Each structure stands twice: as structure tokens, then as C-alpha cells.
Image (tube, rainbow, N blue to C red):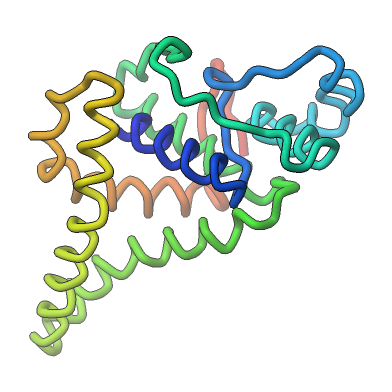
Length: 199
């Protein structure tokens, strides 16, 4: 469900040429473009993010030439993480590469998303000191749902995963929690990847 939403956001921002996003499973490029930007040279020392960082190099070389192919025939299926620990390690690893992005347009967006999610537990705690904050929390939660739910339904229909629609409300609090935790640990914590610990 989380990965499906990430794909939807990726498709939207790339289509509108607002940001450059990708992951290794949905990335294709010509050998000529790869060679022109010297491949992974300059980014091969970074433990995670070679897909995004390579695409940023290509985007700088070919501005306006990076596109998203919205087609069911182009969908690539990947195995999900099999444990919660593996899931969090993967998300922390993804978050850790943010400071290495060449496309700096994405950084304000990441900060906005992070602090927006952080506002939910902040308002919940503040409500114990002044109950009016709980009204703000409820209003923000409703606004978030009104924006995200139609988008989620359209993605579930496109990826033929309609079963996920009924689970949206159940996993919404978890998504907020994991976004806050992985964003924080991605910058200041450690994660395990391919059998080794990475700082």
C-alpha cells in the first residue's frame, strides 16, 4: 500500500515536471545516457540511493526529458519486505539518501511532509494541556483523509489492488508513525542492509 502511493506520487510529480523521483524497479534509461553522465561515478560511495542519484544526473544532462510511463503493461512487481524490521530498515535506508539529492527541489517537499506528519502526535499531546488542540487534530485528520483517500482509490484501481481500499483507514495512523520514525532515523540512526550495519 505504501509503495503503491509512492508510485502514484512519483508518476504525478514526474509527469508535471515538478520533481524527479524513481526507484530501481521503475527506472529505465538508454546506455548512451548512462555513459554520458559517467554512470554511478561520484555516487558509488553512498550506501543507498543509486537509482535516484543516477536519475538526477541524467535529469541534469537532459532537462525535460525524464518521463513517467503510466501503463499497466510496464508495471514491475517486487517482493515486499518479509518482516517489520526489514521494512523499517528499508525505509530508513531510503530516507538516509535525502541529503545527497542533486535535485534540491525535493528537500522542501520532504520537510513539509515530515513536519505535517509530526503535527499529529504534537497536537495529540498538546490536547492534554488544552483540549482545543484535539479539535485542530480532528480537522487536520479529516482534511488529510479527504485529500489522500480519492488518490488512494484511483491508485488501487489502476494497480488492481482494490482489496487495499478497505484497509486505508486502519493503516493511516501507522503510516504517520513510520514516516516520522524512518525520517528521523534516516538522518541520525543506523540501519541494516545486506547483512551489514550502515550509519
